[in-house]
Structures are given as structure tokens and as C-alpha cells.
Length: 260
Image (cartoon, rainbow, N blue to C red; front, top):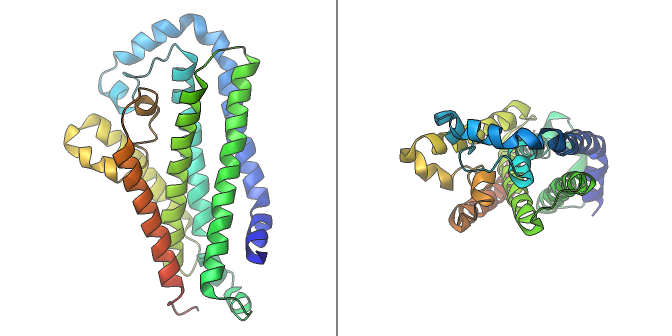
């Protein structure tokens, strides 16, 4: 597991920075809830009546006046976007970075197969994403405990599970794309994340685009759907399949490509 440990060490600083920023913002948002709780009912009614804007972000379904609805709207967006961007940026540099940084000729001269290189890098990606989500969950849940609010912890954990699955899918897709590149694709990873995020918004605005629920992971990681108890097994299975396809494509292609 030498490559696995090396990738964890190489990504340690980035991991700590992203975790501190995302987790810190989540804790701050939760800490602000008591100061707004008295007026949350009026705010919830205001958001619910804003037409397409409310529908785009699920504000017409979430009970913004409750701690769980507030958490899903504020903290969910922070972790949903921030975590997906972290997964995409990290994954895009795993395989392409070896050629872009001219370290592939050193790594691949060792008695280790390309498949093992890919698998250990992929395992490191999963570990980093899981670690970030555990830290963010601790910050969010800890904030709720500190402010003394009661919450349905099963719903909260289910929502965080959906966010974790979404980030793993994004990481797997970008890992596969990384195998196709010869240099890091930072812009490509961020662009893909933004594209899928806006695809999730379009589904809320146009029922004719409902087929996109099997394409974008932001559909099954939407707080309004998860916390409302909507059945999301189909989109989640589709997301798992897309993630596995992306990672599998990366493993297959990297073993056959001509390393520059």
C-alpha cells in the first residue's frame, strides 16, 4: 500500500484546508440558526412563494423554519458543492498528474503493475472523500448539539449518506477522465461539477427534463427530496452504475495507454 500512503501524504494539506473551510462554514451556519429561528416561519413562507426560484432550489418543499430544513438548505449546499468540487479536483490529478509532473517514468519502472497503481490511487481518493465527509458531519452535528436543537438523526445521517454517495460518484467519474488526460484537468473537473449541479436545478424547473435524474447525482442528493422521504433508489443505483463505469473506464484505459 505504498502508493496509497503516498497519495494520502501528498493530499494531506489540501484535505485539511478543504475540510476546515467546508466544516467551518457548516458550523457557522448552524450556529447562526438560533438568532434567526424566531423569524424563520415568515422566511419560509416568503421562499415558498417565490415561484420558479423556490422550485429550482427546493425551497417550496423544505421547511426552512426547522433546524433540519435550514441545515439542508444552507449546510447541504455548502457540502454538496464544496465536497463535489474537492472530489473532482482531487480525482482529476491522480492519473494525469503522473504524466503532467513527469513522474510516470519513475513510478512505472518499479515492479508494480499499472492496475495496482490505479487501484491504490482510487482507494486513496475514496479515503480522502470519506474523511472529509466525516469531519463535516462532525462539524454539522456538533453545531446542532451545541445550540441545543433536537433533530431526527436518522434523517440527518441519511442525507449525509446521499451527499457522500454523490461525491464518490463525482470522484469516480473524474478519476476515469483523468486516465484520458496527459496533464491535470482542473478546469474540466470543476466544469463537470457545475454542469451536473445546474442539471439538477433544471429538473426542478422543467418536468420534461426528468430523465436527467438518472444522470446528475444532485438529484438524489437534494435535501428537499431526501428529507421529504422521496424514493430515490433508482437514481442512486444509476449514480452507482455511472461511477463504477467511470472508474472502470479509467482502470481499463490506463493499462493500455501510451504513457508519455
